[in-house]
Image: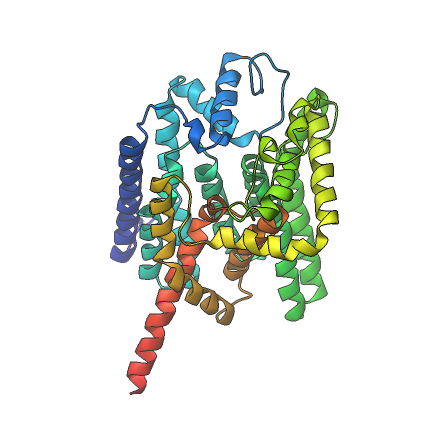
Length: 429
């Protein structure tokens, strides 16, 4: 056997550049976390209950108390299990130290630059792909969520890997590759259920493009079979948790019992009529006439009542839904957040506001260059998943940050497109 040839210098240099981008992103997040929060500080309730409850459930799991919100309560399914089990795994290995979680989240945030590079390399030259990875590593908005116990870092990493896998033609992945992708989708959905929408939107777009291209019937049948494998693999991860909920709660719950309260909190008189809250979400106690929700007995009863009240509000205010939907997207796309958290406002406003013009140009580039390519379809599916989530629930900067890699990729595409146009004009003159 002849000796293996050394990697070309360009490949070696690219690997080293990627290594230093990830290392710098990890160091940036550690410093950011240490300065703003403290590596071994507990989750701050002032920033929301999500991450506080994730940490508490993870701690209870390690202590053998079960999956619940409070030690004296019955087992619960109020939160999806992905983040609590991730925290419980870290506590099992490293002990119940807050620093273990914060450092792990900083590492996941930095590692997200790797799949982003491989996606970008499929639709732009390699230097621009490296630029996309570097921008994500240095993004203050993405780094902000790496310093808290929120689900953004693992979910964004999983979704970026899924987009990277989907950037290859389906037939090239084969059955085993599709199985792996389905398993990752299932894990991502258990971290954040919004991922459950993604494969359906992606498959729909793929079939529309296949029909427009007039693919052969045999090829369409093969794609249908592979997507069936994808769905079965995804559900193989999700259903054990759903069956657990059936056993514990007495009813089938796919992910969590938090969907009803989220839907009702985004569709009520308060968020419709308060100029400061329209398009956002409020908890039970801030909804007029809904204080009795706290006293509804049983987790499933509260979930059913929340869905019923939210649906009734939508039916009674159908004429107001276009206005409410407009404000949902306004909250989602707002450049400068107007929250009391100045650090959050600065981090999100800086990372998003400076790149927004390039993102808009990038959308035009995506529409005009290979819009039906596998890589482009995965990007469109991600954007449409976010849009569907916003229409169904509410708008928030947090949801936009969760697809930060895609937005940065659009910005890079926009900058590349502008430079190519300038070069073409210069050559023409």
